[in-house]
Amino acid sequence: MAWWSRTPGLSQEPGEPKKSVPKGVWNKCERCAATVYEADLDANLRVCASCGHHFKMSTDARIAMICDEGSWQEHDLGLESTDRLGFRVNGKKYSDSLKAQHKKMGSGDAYRGGSATVGGMQVEVGFFVFEFMGGSMGSVVGEKITRQFERALAHRRPAIVFCASGGARMQEGVLSLVQMAKTSAARSRLREAKIPYIAVLLHPTTGGVAASIAMLGDVIVAEPEALIGFAGPRVIEQTIRQQLPPGFQRSEFLLEHGMVDLVVPRADLKAQLVRLLRWFDPANVGVGDAADTLVDDTVADDADDDLAADHADDDGAPARNGRNGAGGNGVAHAADDDD
Ligand SMILES: [Zn+2]
Image 1 (cartoon, rainbow, N blue to C red):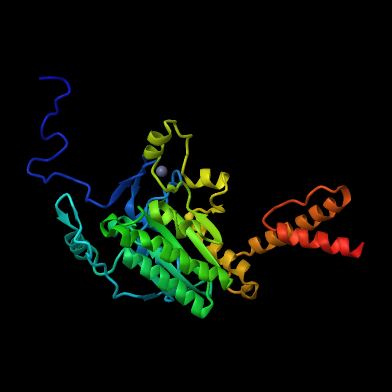
Image 2 (image 1 turned 90 degrees about the horizontal axis):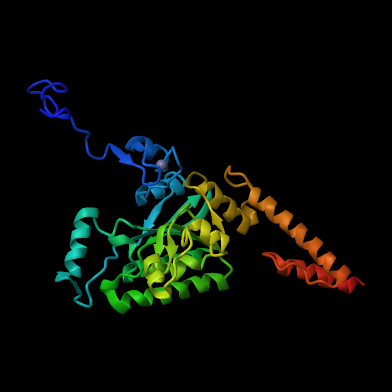
């Protein structure tokens, strides 16, 4: 008998049922390969305690994490996609795929929009449902986002969208593509009315969603290491025939290159959103209990710009063209008038 052969019965009593770990109790971290207990992972907002890797989070858990307790009021529950084009992929009807999704997840589509309070402030907030056909944006998703922006406009409330999507829903063809223009137009009406819109990009945010509302936030926030981009890295490499740099299309790379404004770990995400909402509406300062460091930073930036403007007067150099550049230039002109 070979030395590695196991002697039956040494580790298991005869007749004893084979021990196995129940499915869904343990998980393995993609990044550090640590074995993690599912309940611990849930308690830690589905972030690996060993390395900080952010696992995907269910939309229900995300809503509970962001909205103040008991404040979430979902809208447009009756909207469901139809197969207007009679589309088939590999012989499978789109209408059958939709039926299978509804059987698995109940009614609805890949987006949930509603009214809620965040840190005590009223917002119109929506979430891509990645669990539903990869969060793909078809006509129902586009319509729900548009209605969310319209409610934000009617009530003059900030809008927040949590993006997690593979892009446009190919089964709806041009009806899907037109949602990019439709949601972008609704978003521009918010801008005209000076109502803030915050985009939060989750892993992954790609295709037509990345090419429309995801990149149109007044502030664009991303979770760590989220894949964000229009085309996937493999397609880009094949097209430009060059190897892409490490970390390409990840949140941190995009922050470094000016495509996103903030990369915020999940545990800090709500507090950061509260700071941003207060920053946009100073009347809300004092609401909720999160720190208001962003408000302080802004004051500090204004002071910096004033100094830059003063300095520009001294030596004729242009004023720093930063985020508050317009304010700085305004001060410079005022100084000229005084002279
Ligand atoms: Zn890990």
